[in-house]
Every structure is written in C-alpha cells, then in structure tokens.
Length: 316
Length: 316
Image 1 (tube, rainbow over the protein chains, first blue to last red):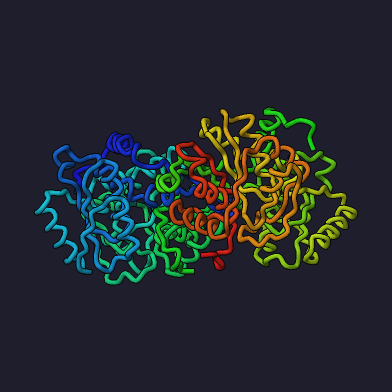
Image 2 (cartoon, rainbow over the protein chains, first blue to last red):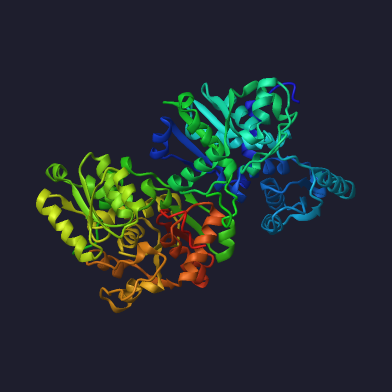
C-alpha cells in the first residue's frame, strides 16, 4: 500500500518508457451508441492493443522497469488469460525469459498463443494453490521475478497510460469508466484521471455475478467473490492491497450489470462499432447503458479492455 | 469517360467538402500479419467509417455536390447493400430526401438499417430491371437525382479520400491495394496514389468467382461477370465507363483469390486485428497473402472496405 499516490511525473515516465513497446490505440465514436445513451461516448480501443488487450501496457512497464540483474533471470507469472500473453510478448521484446504457469484447464489456444509469443509454459494443476506452488518452484530454480497481473505498482501505472492517451485526445472528459476485475486497470485509470483530467469522474462497471469491488467500495475493505459465474471471464478476480487504496480514494462509483446486459452491450459494440471486444470489455458500456441518468449529456471515455474471444464460441 | 484525369486539387476539394460528414478512420498495424506476408502492412479501417463502410465517403461527396435546386428534390439510388445506407445517412446529414429502391430479396435487417438512417424505401421486384424501373418512376415523380454506387465521378472522388488519408499517415507507401467490385473505390484510390503517393503502385484483389475487372484490365474493355457465386457479396458488380478508364490507366495489376482464401483472410483479420470486416474487405489482404513475392519487404496500404456482416451467419 503506497503511503501517497504516485505522481503525475511517475505516470509520464511510464508512458515514455513503454511507448516503443505498445500501440497508441485509436479512440472511436459512434453516433448510434451516443443516441442509445444520451451521452457523448469516446471508446479507447485497447482491444486493438498488441496481443489484444491493455494488459500489454502493464507487462511492458514491469519488464522495462527491471534492473539488468533481474533481466538476466527473467520474469514469471501464473495466468490463463491475457496477462500471460502480455508478459510473454513484453519479455520477448526485451529479449528476456518469461516463465508462464498455466493450469491444465487452460484452453489449448491460449497455451499456444503464449508459446507463439516465446513464453516458456509450465502446466500446473487446476487450483490457485497448484499454480502458486508451480510458480514458487520456478522462482527458486531461476530467480525470476514474479509479475502480478493487477496488484503491483509498475503494472498499475502501465495500465493507466491508456487513460492518459484518452485524455490527451479528449482533454475535457467528464468521466472515464472501465471494467473492474483485479483492479489494475481501474486504479491506473483513476490515477490518470486524477493527474491529467479536468475534473474527470472515474467509474467502473462490474458483473453482478463477481461483485467484490462494488462491495469493497462500500465497506472500505477488500472483499472476496463467493461466486464468479460470469461470461466476463477477465473479471473473476478480486482487488488487492496495492490497487484498492487508490480505488477507494479516487473512484466515484461502481455499477453492477447482469449477464444479459453484458452480452447485449457486447453485441451492440460488435454490430455498431465493427470491433471485436471480449465480454469483459462490454461491462463498462453496459454500465453506461444502464445508468443513463448519471451520464446524460456528459463526455464519457470508455476503456475497451480487450478483444480476445473464441470466435467459435460466441455468446450470441 | 473523363477526357483527362481529375486533378490533385479536385481531390483536395472533395476531402475538405466531406470532412464534416465522415470519420477520419484509423490506420492499424499487426506484427503478426506482417510476419505472415513478409511485408509491412498498414490497414486503413473503413469498416470503422460511419455506417460501417467507405461508401459513406462517395455518398457524402455526391450529396454535398448537389445544387440547392437539386437538394430540394432529393436523391435516389437502388441498392441492397452498403451504398443504400450511405446515401440515406448522407442525405439525412444534409437534411434532404433519400429515396432508396431495394429488391424484395434484400435482408430485412438491411431494409431496417436504411429506414433507421431516414431513407424512404421502395421495395421492387428482385431483378436489376425491376429496380431500374422503380427508380425511373421515382425520378419522374420527384425529380430526385440518381446516385450510382461506383460509376459517377463525385462518388469515385469521394471514395478516393480514404487513400489520401492513408498516404497522409504513411507517405512512403510502396503500394496500395483495395478490393474491386464496381470499381469506385479502386479508381478513387488510384487517383489518390497518383496525386499523393511517392511512386506508389496500385493493385486490387478480386474474387476469382467474379473476375470481370481482372479480365477487363487484360482485354482493355469492360467485361461482364457470367457468374457471381462469391461470399464477397459487395464485389459482384462490374466496372463502368467512368471508372474503367481511370483503372486502365493507373492500376498496376489485379489478383484473383478463391473463396477459401477470402474466408481464411477474413478470419485472420478478425482474430489478429480484433476488427469486424465483411468478406469483401478481406479480398485485398487475401491477395497480399497469396502474392508474397510481389509485396515482400514493401510498405503496403490495404484498404479495409467495410464491416457490415450478419453476426448470426458467419462463414466460419
């Protein structure tokens, strides 16, 4: 837990550090979707980021922040999702080793993607404990540095650079809204809005079926998900001790959305904006669609988090 | 048939005229797709254009070029595809009437889209003759001006503005490649490359199952499609007497691709670039994938023409 918030200069340093390794993604608009909400929407398309998600930013910053000694030993993470690919690709760009622990339940296509990006995959048992034990063994054997997908300051600051770019493109945003899962994107975006926005509110959308952040913002302490039965598979995780204090201090509200609302919002984005977004990415737009009175006549930046979906298994 | 090519200033005038009515679409890149081809690819994403296709540009220019008297009488076209939506939306922006003749075989979703954009739809019989007769009746009754989707100079110049923007973003392109159907996009892009490029070659991809332009470029005269059995439903039309002389003079070559190659290229774009493209849009990339020796180590601009697909009926 940081004693004080990271500074504006910290964020600028991160933005400069990762610039060679990430895309500056476009900000898209749609008159039709504006009409659905009564707001003026600006979609920051991190689905068009390298490896298809904002996770590339945090991974790139974590890797670029390593000391020379750390670089020689490489990095390790356990993930079955976008962060595994992001770490593998960021490590490849820096020419260092990436050890990725993936559960034996991970889809073959995701394992293949990590290997394609040069990651050294270790398959573990299916539970979190299995993954953590396999990770520990790798750290003991190699001295590789552990990278956490959402609860590590370098990662959080990297994720915040998407919102910095969004505010560079649309400086007078009234609000930014992101999905919230582990909390890295939300905390980073909140820091960006705090330092770069002009009185810019920060919100998140969260699946009602994995509502730990909604409850945490109200209770003032980290909460646990007792069920995570959501199509938004990137948002099943919970907040951590590094990102939660930032969220508690800087985030205005979190809105819950149902599974049907997530899928409907996802389809609107596919059909109207012609971009491929994963269900997690549609959660923020679903929250805007559901809470039109909050956002009416406002300029609202929506961070589209990623576009990694199985085209053979769509929810519509 | 123009006595001489439209000038660079003509294109600049068009670009300025339509700027308030169109998106400046992003140019995206993908290391993975570069790796597939050995070329450096720059995708001009007209699928992210208003109403989801480059057709918006030509329609916007045609409408904005009307005299005040013509504006009072409105415009008319017959189309079951993207041009119908483009004319309806461009007319709506200019606050004039758009009469759209659509065959009774047109998908209900396309008819609904035209109506949503404010078009006044007349349903005709299924043949080209039916549509032309219905169009004539409307012209007689209203005095509306007929807009052709590909064989009218205002439309061709409008379509060319996508390639102008692409060359503004990447001035030293070695080549631009577009799909070719009716020929408006190809002719307009060739004019843009001629006036704005630095020794920039121009190519097109065409479905082998609708290969009139490929044959026309070789025979020196407009050819007819005897079959149009292609998934690229936007490319079933043939060249016209206004765009063909431009194509014959300025286009370097046209490459044919099979149905399987179109679908494979489409899936690569969806999976790797996270954007929704219609089959017609994938034809140009399919041609690059198939002719890697032509494009190896070159900087190649690929115009992604549109993203209007039925998500419930994908070819993969």
